[in-house]
Image (cartoon, rainbow, N blue to C red; front, side, top):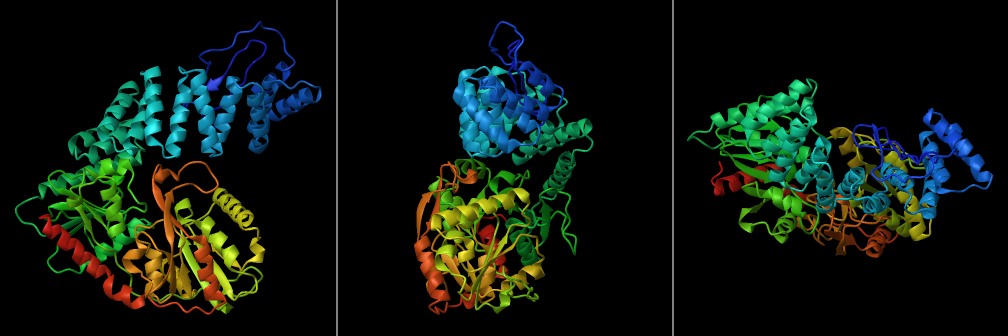
Amino acid sequence: MTPTARPGIRRTGCSAWRAATTGTGSWRGWPKPLRKRCVVSDLDPAIALYEAGRPAEAAAACFALLEAGSRGADILNLLGASLFAAGNGDAAVGPLEEAVRTAPTHFAARCNLALLRQQRRDWAAAETHFGVLALLDPAFRLAQDRLGTVRQERGDLDGAIRVLTRAVRIDPRSGLAWFNLASVRMLAGLFGEAIAGFRHAVAEDPAGALAHVQLGEMLLRLGTVGAASEVFRRGLRLDPAASNAVNGLARCARYRAMTAAIGTQAGGVAIRGPFESATGYGYFCQRLIRALRGRQGVPLEVIGTRGTESWPGGALDRPVPARAVVNCLIPLAVERVPGRASVTFTMFEGTRIPPAWRRMSAFSDLIVVPTESSRLAWAEQGFPEDRLRVCPLGVDPVEPGAVPVLVAPGGRLVSSYRHRFLNVSDFNPRKNIDGLMRVWLRATAPTDEAVLILKLGRSLGPTLRAELGALVRGAERAVGRRLAEAAPVVLIDRLLTDGEMTGLYRAATHYWSLSHGEGWDLPMTKAGAMGLGLIAPAHSAYLAYLDEGNARLIPSSVGPARVPGQEGFHPPFHGLDWWLPDEEAAAATLTGIVRGGDRLPSARDRLAERFTWERSADRLLAILDEAGMR
């Protein structure tokens, strides 16, 4: 029911079914239409209005039929399709669900409901309905395509591959079907099979520039620079505006120059990473580069993820005599440079890495992680331990930053509260913001001298704000208290500069996390280095730099990585476990601080002495030296 998947309606007069093929927006007939005698139906005027582009009038005509006592699945289906087309997707759900309950095999109604659920990101319901469609007509490729897409969104890559493989068998001449299958194979770490799939997609649709670009990027992951360069050029001829093809060619040129520079001399370091991005990987990549630049006798080369980036304040794009490339990236984004070893500096936040990461990691000669927790995550999934190394990250020295003027709900200045708790998180299930809110509701009251400063993401649009509202309401229901009955919460959801972020830390007295798992947690270590009292779950990376002597640790257990309030796993953790902090213990900790005067110890000295970016750079160099990669 999006522009590429318009609602199918059943014309009672001629029993014609309509649906859309994915990606094209063109109409096609259903594989097994029901045949009835062609008669003029009471529904035909409403169908004519819908097909004339007048969905609001079509919906009104359907309502009139319902009021007159007609309540068949055809009417309900057309009503749902018309309401959605008129911009009222919320109202469309009820009629379509009733149509499916009334006639479970009504193909068009179930397809429309499935598409609506998919459009609303209700993945579990969408998967159920597309699964039924695939059973009702196993030869209908659209159902297989959409079922594969939904399973991919839910993180079930193996399940997505199975149904997308069936889609290719149904229509082996479809470039789109091959492209979809190849894309999921890529995410699953099946690089050889993904390349074969993209080649099929190109063969069936030679004009598809995107398939060429994806094929080129897959070839680069395996270090096949010459073949990748040719594919990128073909893609650029098909679409001169294809920026990914331009970037791919730029990386090919860089890798060829790096290969030509390989000689007997060594000692340099080549680093590839997203140093221009405002992400955790971008941040630690920047800090490592700055620390390595200060090392005497260490030639340094820096490559961005696109290949066209330049390091600010000095040229670091000349090939250096390095024997390896250090990728500060997740395994999926690593590209091999011919003639050089591949080192992946990465991390994971669960008890085991996904099987896809295990397959991707096989293309790296070494995996470097910041903590023992991540090392165990790779080892638990069967990765060879002799190819795993630990290199802790660093903590920034305290920098200047003006304290912002923050106002709590009700107009009181945040600075006037005695206890000011800060949490800096991306807005995703792993950060456990719902648990954070439940604990805050249990542990605090409006009369407490406490305020929570919640810095979420870089910018929350309307959709994410709606999700946050639903999350807060769910926390209120779970605890039996409204947010107004707890201490105030101040929400900040915009991108801040480094100076503004430092000021935000200065505005707080405590830093608090209830995360389900961390690879490092840069905000926690920064807060500790600035002297804030730390409250953290006793799991994952936190145990690498915190203990009972310098923080308040919350007991945690291990459990499935479920999405709160939904069925299924958080997609990056499909089938895996993470940690579940004890919310009762967390509430007791907060109450002890706010009402009992519990004074937290400081982690500043330990963090400042043991975890600097200079020590991180030295450890990385030692790892490369020990492996003969420098």
